[in-house]
Length: 330
Image 1 (cartoon, one colour):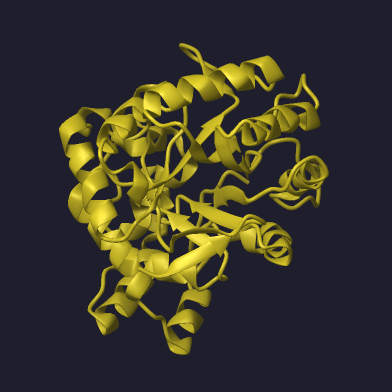
Image 2 (spheres, rainbow, N blue to C red):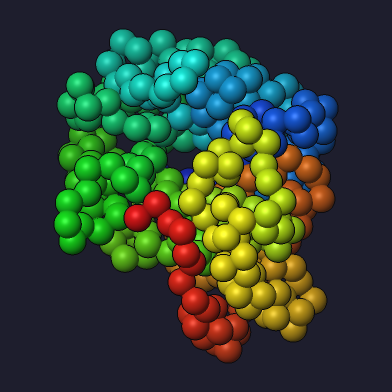
C-alpha cells in the first residue's frame, strides 16, 4: 500500500487506516464480536493498513483492550493512535483536560493497549475549564518521557460555538494555532467525505501548509456511502445513527442520488461505491489519510483496496457535480 508522510516528525503510515470504534462502541452493538474484530485487525494489517485509530472513551476502555489483544505479536506492524480528554457517564460525556488526568489517562491507555509507546496521542476535545495550552503541554511532556511519539487534535464538534457566518472548523483552527505554539501538531482528525466536504474549506489548507496530516474520520458517511444501507431500515436504539439527521428514512431516501453517482463510477472501475468514496478522499491531498471504520474482515480488506484506485478527471468532475447531502448538523 502507498505510504503517506505526516507531521513535523515525518510519520509514515499506510494511505488508508482502520477506525476501530465500531468494533465495540456506537454502531450496532449486537453485531460486535471480539474474536471477529481481532481477525479484522489482522486482515487489515495483512492488506497494508498501519494506522489503527481508537480512544479510551470507546466502550469506554473496551476498544483499547480489544486492540491491545489484537496486536499481540504484531505491534511492530501497526501505527497506533488513541485519544484522551473525554469521560463517558451513563447519559453524558464531559471533557477533562487537567494535566494530571492526561498523564494518568496515558498510562492507563498504555496498559490496555499492551504497549510501551503510543504513536499518535490525540486530544479528543479541549476542556472549556482548562486552557488548551496547559493540556497540550502535559501531552508534550509525554513525548519527552518517551510514552508518546507525536500529538494530534480531534476537530471541535460541528455545532460547537459557531456564530453567524462562521465556517465549520473555525474553532478547530483557532485551537490549532494556540497549541502549535506549545508543541508541533502532527495530525488533525475531522470528518471528511463526499457528503461532508467542509474540512476542505479551511481545515485542510491549514494542515497542508504545515505538513500536518488530516485523518479523515467517517470517510464513508458512517456507512451510508457504501450503498449497503437502505432507507427506512432502522437502527438499534444505542446506534448513534438512530439520532443523526441524515439517517432518518426521509433523508436516507433523499440522499440516494449521492450513492447512485458513486455506484456509476465504481462500475466503470470494477470497484465498489465505498472504494470510490475513499479514493476521492485520498485525492484531496498527500497528507490526507482516510480512517474508515469496520467490524468485519471483508470490509477492512475492501477499504484497503481503495488505495490502488485512481480516479480520472471525469470521475472527479462527476463527484463534484453530485447533489449536496441533505439533513446535516448545520
